[in-house]
Length: 257
Ligand code: SAM
Image: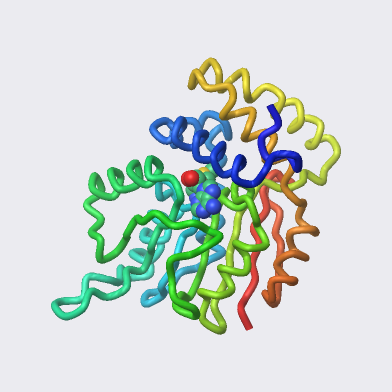
């Protein structure tokens, strides 16, 4: 199976991506720990440190899934001493974090986590929304984040254009994605490890295709330089790409002028 290959029509890619995340939703969080040996937690912490959210900021976390980035942003706001949201009376204020995702099953897990942590909708909302057609007005958000989501999107250039559209002038686009390992020894080890993932996925989750998709989608996604160019082409400024773990993952930052 060649998920995400050029020969596969885009509608097929969208359907396959949806099937993959529906089948992994309930064990997504545990599998992330298993597959990344816990390192994804550290990457996500680094991502939110890079965002450095401040009280009053309106963030939209696109492809936010089960809320890993959203909960970290709220924790960072709490640490900054201003949880935000929850204004008394009147029209509901914009929550500091809004999660959008195409997959209702991933969102359902996120909503359950929010309920379990007693996070109110005044601080965090979950809604169905496509990265390629964001259900938001132009120039309405301070930051668009997307973590491990872009490589699942059928048309990344369209998703970038949408992020730029909804950002206010001076707003920030911040993305984290699997990237190209630049260190040769690490690249070989990483390749070998990737080759094992479908088998591990079969044993641990009974779901080899989902993990074959994961590995394929990582291999096919543009590298740091190519995606940095796409960001500039989309009109983002001061584009910066920072490797984590030797380039296994990279953080991409750009600003709307
Ligand atoms: N951001 C979360 C994280 O870092 O843990 C979830 C990442 S998960 C690997 C990828 C998510 O992208 C899935 O929840 C999937 O449903 C979502 N997704 C795929 N295509 C999308 C699209 N076109 N628009 C919005 N979300 C999408």
